[in-house]
Amino acid sequence: KSLRNAASSDDMNDDSSKDGSNEQSIPTAALNLIKGCVGSGVLSLPAGVAALGDVPKAILPASAIVLTLGAISAYTFHLLGRLTYVTIDENGKKESKQTSTINSIGDLWEYEVGKSSSWLVSASIFLTCFMTCLAYSIILGDTFSSLAETAGLTGLMSSRRTSILLITLTAVYPLSCLKSLAALAPVSLMGNIGILMTCIVMTIRALPGGAYSPTAAIGATNFLRSLPAELQPSFGVTGFRSPRSLLILSSMTACAYLVHMVGPEFYQTMKDPSVVRFGILSAVGFGGTALISAFMMCVGFLTFGGACKGMILNNYSTLDKGATLCRLLMGISLLGSYAFLSKGMRSAFYEIFYKGKEITDKIHYRTMQILIGILTTLALFLGDAGFVVSVTGAVLGSSLIYIIPPYLFLKSTKRRTTDGSLTTT
Image 1 (tube, rainbow, N blue to C red):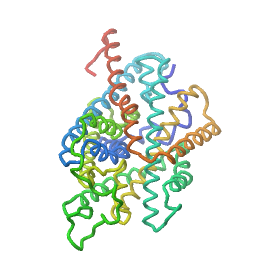
Image 2 (image 1 turned 60 degrees about the horizontal axis):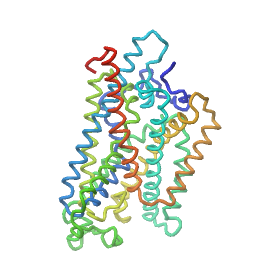
Image 3 (image 1 turned 135 degrees about the vertical axis):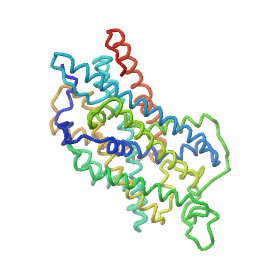
Image 4 (image 1 turned 90 degrees about the vertical axis):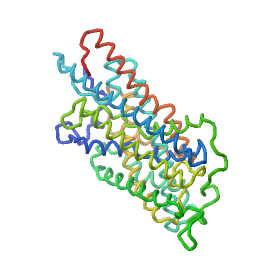
């Protein structure tokens, strides 16, 4: 009996085979981990603070939540590495023909809980990837619509629905159909550059007397006049809202740390993998993500206050060249992230409906046509990425981050205590 997902045929076997050539050092793995985390979830966090209140002090409890959940997420991610180590170690000591490869949380669930219920994990991963891809489609539509307006296009050519259709046909669908994602390696670099540039631009725009400040010096660049009323900075109108609004921010924050689906893969692709080294990776990767997330959340909220939209870059004027560059870089980054997420989505889909069967090209392309078609249709009629992100985080992200890893670790600990094999791991 093999622990490898039976549906993970050629579709899952890209150029990054585990032959040692793709081993990652801790710094490299940490950068990839940060890139995987920082995406639509981070760009939605200012709206989460706005749901709490429109006063500057709202960033204090908001920052506490982001940093605390970051620490918890790092711990549960580390648990997945520890579980992967235990499973591989135990299989290596057996004389059976079991493989020591663990490809997913579903494999860990099958090993610790049972095969009959492993589809629940696959379904959770599928829905998480599906909903995140939906948020990305909405954001890509907003992003490229703003870019079209900056380029001077008007009317139908600059509408978000047109942008969604064009970007889906020319980029999203072709990239999502890739069986090997090796060609997307440069996108990670572009994504990190985009994050850095976005942090710099948002910081400059948040400075007192900046381009979006009502107190900007006479004659200075001021983009407020180009913004509709609902996008202009708003402070002190409603004050603090109900503490229950913290749940909205907590849900959004879950999406900012949602990379646990690839926890076992990160462990196995590390150079000289060990529980200690994986712990360092978890601390550095999630620590960096938490700091970046809290920083971008604060500067975005301190610029627009209660007017923050579900995707903060939507608040910036289309005349703002700095924001335009950020939109372009983040748009390219999201296209790469979309391709990786769609790979996880179809892998989970195959686990549910085609487990143990060969995945032919016909099945592969038909599946992606149906899934991308549904995603695009929903994106055309849903305009609030922040809402999608909060729902995804509350219902799905929370289970993958805060529930499943601890549950699996407790099951493993109980089993190893019972059979006398428990070690310090």
